Length: 575
Ligand code: X8Z
Ligand code: ZN
Image (cartoon, rainbow, N blue to C red; front, top):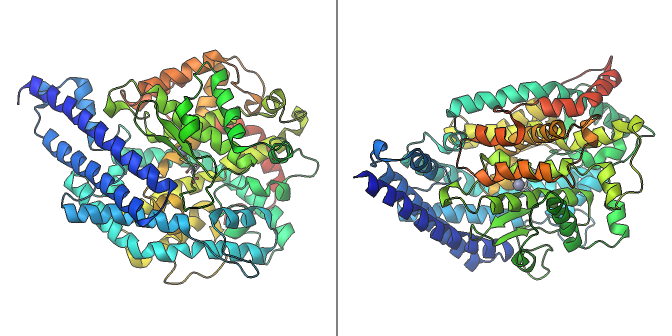
């Protein structure tokens, strides 16, 4: 093949993939906003067609003459194999089977309900999650937790076959297994990436352990030492969240006396009768204040902000790039809470990123790596400071800096508590895909990791039928998870760099980029690049640094760390 033919191949590949991706996006949108057997079949079919074309093109691209390609084309060919989180075997029957399995698992997850004793009717995940965040009755908490986790038993029926077929697909593209394929997306050797993750985890682990020890002690005073032993794992149903992945809902239980809620605006939002659409408008105004354009009319017309009453939908929040141009949307079952206020900023971050790279060639219409995509909206969220809330009228006054611990503790319950969970979901899946952990050990290994990394334990005995990883959306829906761990590091690195650039003095927790066109310019420079360059280039555009660093996070929480150490003195840390 001559080099002009090779360029022509790349051009055609991009236009074919664009067309099939749009078809798959539309079909999936219909499925996710109207779950039924037809939309499930159509969405699985469209996904199978896109995967089929991707595999075919990736195999053909292996025959292209390397020296006939520009560096840009070579990068595109490398990315071609990595755009999808799921690769199916080329056998059409197996490909259809696999995409159907994933759609079914997602549907099972989205429609699961459980009726706790005394409930008039079965309750969905959002309702059970509300019990987890609001109830302080350990029996009700355990029942809601256990009832939701029953969904895993259903997912378990499909999971081993899904693993087998997904691996068969990944192997056809030359990867040892699907986990190795996921680890290959970071412009470095897959093993080097795994080491990079470990390095970052070791840097933040002491902070996590301090927080864990402190929270455990406070919970022991609430629930008693029989339920919360002073030196053992914390029961996972007491932390305010179904997966114990963020603990901010129990802030009031663990806050030091006299500290300020600082960042909780649920009450204010509800008192004002704020609508879901208005919640989104608050977030849009933040992005606009950075010099970015308002969202297009189609966003407001086509997004799903509220759970429809008459049909089943996938409530897990997501942002969509339907036509890879300007048909961007979000899908959320919005509740008027502090938590969803943050989630909306997170989702709009995806949409603004998608819009900024829309002018890149198709294979570069993605973030630098997936952690960047997840970090962007959260970076804006870090700028939702008490002072910002006062500016937009959602809070009356910011707590004075002497009460800083309250603001930091709440933030840590949200962000620091997340770190080990963000790490373990894919450490578990990596072992599952590699075959190191077989179906008989799925759940046991899951809990040994939950205990080792998070220091939590299951609230009820787990039996051979249980499959608790399946009770997490991303596991049931085949969404890689290490991106969130990276994003939790990166968002603080971005935030700290933007503060440095602005000459900010004082605590990082009181810095906001609201209204800063200069910050907007830097963020946009990174977003516009899309995936056209290796991620260190994108990182440099916003931070001036080329390595992912935990220092931003550690600096942000330094005053809290000192306070926690003081509080924890003489008490056990770790499990
Ligand atoms: O799934 C999400 C977003 C959509 S990309 C709502 N997140 C992870 C989760 O919910 O488990 C954001 C934080 C972690
Ligand atoms: Zn996200």
